[in-house]
Image (tube, rainbow, N blue to C red; front, side, top):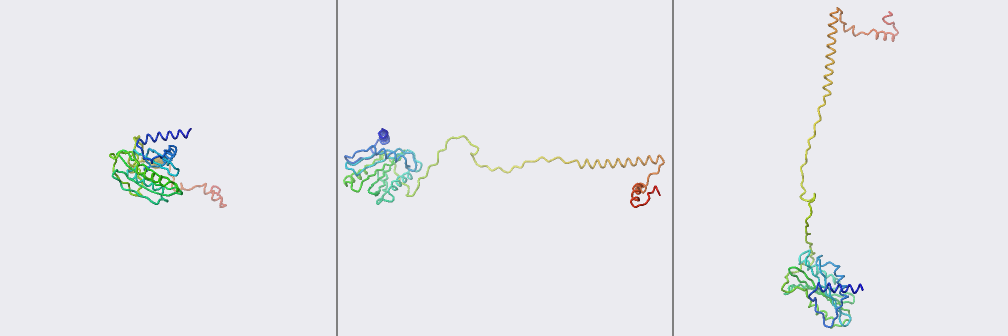
Length: 290
């Protein structure tokens, strides 16, 4: 049931994505929707035109006699992530890579009068021979690549193989010739360049804008108040000296008024108690016992 539903969905997608027939199949060949759905699922998972968002449509046809099959894929992109020329080069390189180690014939034809670029290759893998053809066309709004591949086994009927290869010439990108734009693929080896991302309107951040270098700032520091304690100490010493001097002058004046002779410096400098202690230490009699 799930398999049948997948086939119906694939047919619906192909019909919507491919309103114009992609190829004119050989007469009496039968379409295989189940095989087309499998191919569409695999191809949709790959990257096309350098990473553009694409719509994939597929068709599969089987010859009346087993041994030959025709698979056709149309890939449509409305918006590219690189230039048109680079996107086409990506599609050409993708086809070439399928038979890179086994190809014995590979050609990229110049743009035709119908403004279509064609790449064609033939290669063998095991017992299967493949003839692949890619046709790319573009309009002002779309880029379309339609690729057809004929698969045949070694002992396949030659008439059916030729009929399949002839059908590749009927590949149709679905863009009318009058609407096609002429262009050439980018040189081989040119990797697609992604377009710059679209900037969205977002609130400003502190990290936005230019990185401005501010000059160094000098912050003035408050000078501490002068220490006045030495001044106060010096003034106190001077005041005490003045008091001692004044007190001495006052005492001398009182002694003169009382008729007492002031003590001389020599007598003032003698100390009887000290002399007695010194004499006792020497073993002599103190003065007051002499």
